Length: 220
Image (cartoon, rainbow, N blue to C red):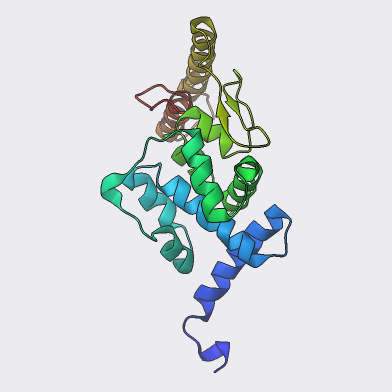
């Protein structure tokens, strides 16, 4: 039967387009590996965000990949609050890679999907995670204070930064949030929809605070 008469052909084609984007980002022709990496990304992210965020994220996935996303999903146990070691172990297990490879592979998938999802969706979803996981999903091997290190033979988490370092980080984050909010409150003669502009600025400030551990975000 030709694809012209196959009602599932468009669904399969769209899934292949997304999978090809992931493979290209990983710089591989191995579609099986690309699918393992994509499944690992979907499951590790899914397990660490809330049900509402999962609804927004999964709604934009192709139908076949939405099925992959919800494989073995147990919403009553989510979101998990495991740290970096558990995240990397789960990702590495599902992707079939070494834990030291997780940052690069996870980031490649993140950037591929970021181009497919609506603008700003992934940063908003990641903002509910601990800052170290947020950075890991964008390929960081160490965060601004050096807490996160992924050595060649495994995953290690350094001690928390001292109080002065944490205070400096919080002050910087608060300053950035205030600047984002103040820009949204500015009214220019050419502005028409100031309410939308203000709401968008408030959302950016909120995301900044959540990403840095404010508002009840669990530490890594």
